[in-house]
Image (cartoon, rainbow over all chains, first blue to last red; front, side):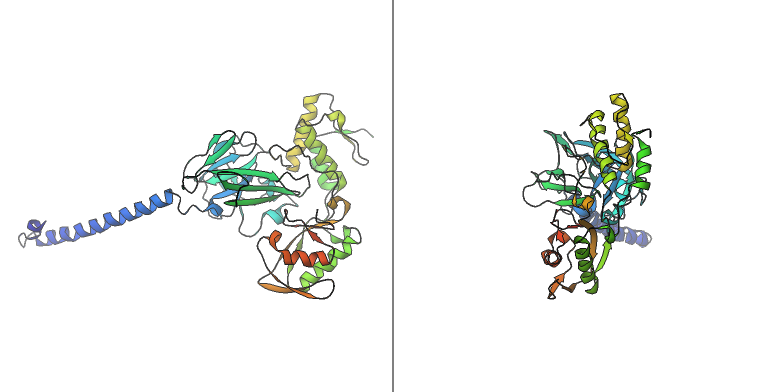
Length: 203
Length: 191
């Protein structure tokens, strides 16, 4: 590098350009390394934002505290039931229509559409109108179903998150837990108001 | 009068003739007076109160209950009870057709089917009896709310109303008790 930088006057300008470019490239490479490192941390889930990346669904409509999901964003669905099932979907469009979101039907909307909550129509695929469950926006890995229960390590801490839902008197309570449902504090929870009553099943 | 078979017709019918009320005046005494006094105390203190459902239609509840059971094959159409003023024919004379008609209603009403639940939408409840109210209550910071005995309680706003025990105590002083599993729900006995 020294020899190249110490060349004739004629090549001086070119050499200066090259010598300037090399440190810039080095800085750039280091920066890229940092970006990659940060990306790895994100991929490792250090900053997995449960609140913004998990929502609940009824039929092909996702309710989530995130107003910024672009059309086409991948969403992995965990459909509750026995066994739980996993489906791939995408954001179709943000909506406030009760025709595409049962959670926004008359009598329900006032409670479900609380400030900060957004609703998205999903690509329907094989989502049934009575299916309920969770939508995970771009999860770091796909959930796998083990013994009827979907599991995925969302925050990449080496422990799997699991999913539960149960009926309250007037709605459905959704929750995400680490390793075992109803043990400790949930990592995330959501409430779906139904505007009718049934016998609760929540423990 | 000839009965009309179960199906989407009844969703339209219920949305016209069996709607839930959003009026506090449709509640029954003494809960109605208690709820009004509690809401007045909240508003006087600076809270915003948005009343949702008050008295629920028993006819609507009846339709919810039986379409859920029949549509999910948890009851036979022939087992459905009748209700005065709701001339629905649950039994189409064919099990699959009866189920299909009921399922159309499940979809139309947007009924939920929680996993493992064998509990149909209720036929009886405090809402149906006029003894419950669903409402959102919000304010900023801390407000002083008068209890029924005239004393004031300083209450900090909490995003999760189910955790706001001070607010629950104020409501209870009026005979309006919080159900802590469902954010908007208050009733005469907390159920």
